[in-house]
Image (cartoon, rainbow, N blue to C red):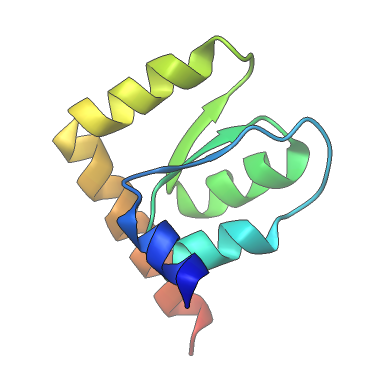
Length: 93
């Protein structure tokens, strides 16, 4: 319950992973319709190709730029949320 409350309060969720694979946390954020900002791990690139629900960073310095871009560009933010919803809805059937 507390975890859902914290994620629900976020406008965007960061995944600055250096190693790893597809994250259960990412699926949880998508279930709560939260746009994400991700590192360029192969698993994240693959899911962004399928859903386009966020932005990808190739270096650490890009995270601040991408956060500002996501929060200041309402059209981008809304489109990411719509893409996430469509992605989740297609997989919920």
